[in-house]
Length: 392
Image (cartoon, rainbow, N blue to C red; front, side, top):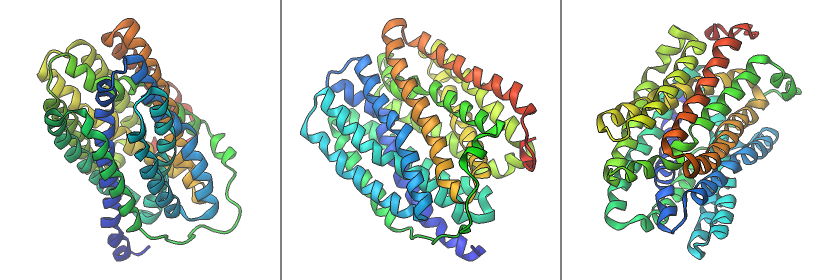
């Protein structure tokens, strides 16, 4: 794609990210509070959030396979966006545990399909300008900030029961924004693609996917119980929303400079730094929740635990999975990390929260990201990194 033509797609790509992450900013921080308002305990909340994450294990790869073979990723994004909107409407038909588990499973099976395919579509649209990905993705962070900030005050005044209506409006916006992005056609060669098993046979690819799994595993207690944890320690919902937003502001600042950080430091150093700082983040959260100033620092570390980590990971996935494998590569990143890691982290954190308490749960999370850092430190230098200049 030529320079002017590529620049013309930036607003349309950015609009989808804005809407998608605005919805995420309403769902992830406040879903646990909504479930608690319905009378569910920590174990049930952990299980329901695990359902939300667990569909990422299967859904992205299924839809990724379809997108790679059809060459029409945006068709998949549109179908998934509309289907998730319709499925989520079922939340108004019941409030029982098993009904909500069913609605969550069906809705998230479609919703979790759209982002990996849009990531592949975005990277493909950028062509040789993939280092500009973070400049587009930051609009998702802006959407998240506006959503989580506004909704914190809305829920403080109107109660958690207002959340489903807000989510439905945002899911509608996602579908509308998907219509703005047209298919680019099949730009990939018609010759057979490299078998995906050959890519997965590379040491550094398997290592990266394992690190992604452990990283998102460690985030389970954060995404499931962070808002509840703060509320139990006297923080108002408006303040909670502002703390979530602060984390994403830090994330945006990283996205703004990633195109300079990557060539200067290389992906291995940046990945290692993100993992070590994530461990520090969870330890501070475990020990100093009653100190607001420390909680501000904890949220600023979101710059490393998500912003730095995600920008590096998405760059590596795009580099490893070429051509017709792009959709499945992004799907594997989502499935094994946010899916398997996130689901197991949410489920186990619910059990640990009840059995051992919040502090122990976050210390366990710090251990997981620490193990991931150890793997990168010990194993990545010995991996075969031929042709990947930024990885050394």
